[in-house]
Amino acid sequence: GAVVSQHPSWVICKSGTSVKIECRSLDFQATTMFWYRQFPKQSLMLMATSNEGSKATYEQGVEKDKFLINHASLTLSTLTVTSAHPEDSSFYICSARESAAGANVLTFGAGSRLTVL
Amino acid sequence: AQKVTQAQTEISVVEKEDVTLDCVYETRDTTYYLFWYKQPPSGELVFLIRRNSFDEQNEISGRYSWNFQKSTSSFNFTITASQVVDSAVYFCALGGAGNMLTFGGGTRLMVKP
Image (cartoon, rainbow over all chains, first blue to last red; front, side, top):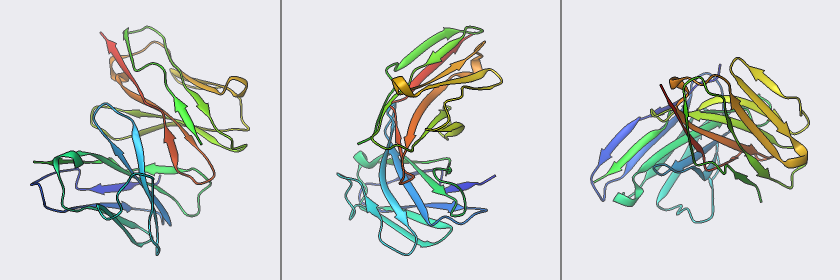
């Protein structure tokens, strides 16, 4: 079946640094990928929709200059948390829809846990 | 706007008990999809089921069963003869035309031996 790989699975960084998280569709092409954020013991909140070859669409309240999304190919989307601060510590999960698949057939990555010191 | 409500934030049962997780949704779309995901402590989301809005047939998969009732906008999930390995957070989610999912708040299920 479809597999989405996220890397790194966990990362610890110092405040003020930038962190890049990769989301790859391993065996399918994905024109659209989604980035979610999950705080401890809370639900997943959609941050942005990543579109291959065009700008990402951000949800209300999500700072696009803070969370840079690049979807340069049909198999890779990256989320860069710029100038990270402790409040950015969270679990980030991506999902991808196989271009040739039916609607709403989404595959989720295993998530990336970010801790900002 | 889409909304998913999982009224039960935490449920605790003893092994072998049956447990039902409730999910109520709101949407203006006529075509939509409903999902259940399991999130164990490791964090990854495990897909359990997808149901489209035109298919109200209940489904059973082993110890899992789902009851979709469009009239009450509910999509409840029952685990029969629960096991300790069922302990996790379970999310109900709603998908519309844009493929993005709206998640409920999740229900933390604790199955005690």
